Length: 375
Length: 254
Image (cartoon, rainbow over all chains, first blue to last red; front, side, top):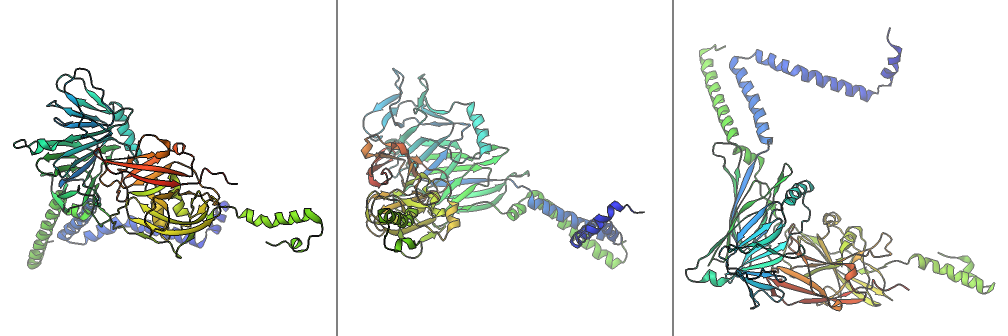
């Protein structure tokens, strides 16, 4: 006898619920029967046909997997520009040699007594609100520990300027920022001038505020035989060029961006995509966040007088290359999945083997057809 | 609203007359809020063009820091310090230069009062996208937009929901520094030194790239103050700009 307690349930089931239950059970039946049906179907075919169908099935799976897998790629940038903006990383140290430069400070520097590496200038070259110092140390080094906003600009009169300011973070990702901050806490944040003649390091800025201009005078750059290349290695958020504006003589002149694959492959790097940069373009290279750590773009800037532009070479493992063009909204320059797929060496290898297999099978099938009987 | 008792001749003396007078004043008292300005034309003139253009204005925005919230909610107001016919040119510009609007308003006020500037945007979704502080600048200058710049700015601020009061806060000035490396401000009446403005690094900053934040407690209590904007290119000083800020916030309503 049926359990009477179950009767009401059967009565209360709505037609919609019954239909849904029937649909689900049908789907389960179909899926559970699929492997058997496939095996049964293959069993009725020849050995060649079975191998072929299996190969197509596996290849389809491989294509889907390859298409959706996270491809890694790197970009490289080569540009000529009059202006570059950087934000140095919060958890790293940046060092630049600034010998024979004029250091302009908002507020007087606290120079140690009897030092001879820096000389106070009174020629007003730094501007009315600034104090100017001339460096006489051949190895004068600027040390930046932590995040600073830096602008490097080559003016039309062959003078190279470096503006160094305190960085105010805006909307950094909380996770990444916490990791950066933790690392930064182990390092004293600040900017120093380091000397080679035994003078102790001189801290720049006061009360957490830093406003320093560094001028690399044109007389050195243009003096006959005094070709002085200056190189500034960097890592950090980078903006190459400046938005087109009415006063804008400082902008990107030309350049190109290349994107390479960086998957495991024998030659490691394969060119995937490339684009030219035009006069007035602005290129933004942002860090990418992986495992709660920021991976910054890196590279170097070279100023080689008497040229009036800066050569910039930058690299990064990121899809964060934004090109902003005058009259355009700006776009994120990254390769499509399809482009990455066809440049994936493993995919290309497997696809080639597969096509060769298909060709072989077709040839064998054709041969068997003529001979009648290759079961 | 009508009161029949008041239409009859007064029969019961002074008390009844006073009562009628009070009742008739009631609707006026309920309507006590911001005086709406009249927008020139039927519709707000605004554009959103991702293909941004070059702009030449140095002072792009002068506003109470939170005033941008009033754009999408239609809660934007100013408080001219003097009575009279007022023509107001309201300009709204996004930092990336893609969104801009420029509209004339007219209003007649009999005293320093709160003026509500209707801002019913047809591009509300786009305006809402600029909901980060500093992503959009508002300026309300005295006179029509077509006239020569008067360098007299009203102070746009967020109205409360009932459009009765203007929210207070720090003053934000947005500057297009072009090639300037440093921008600073000074309130002439305070006689203080120049205070530095901040460079805006994040995102695209086509329309303006410096923001000056003046704390409310540093603004003198006056209907009109003069603010000087100083700009430097690697220490070389450019000609300073000055403008007048007209704000009746400090006047008590009678």
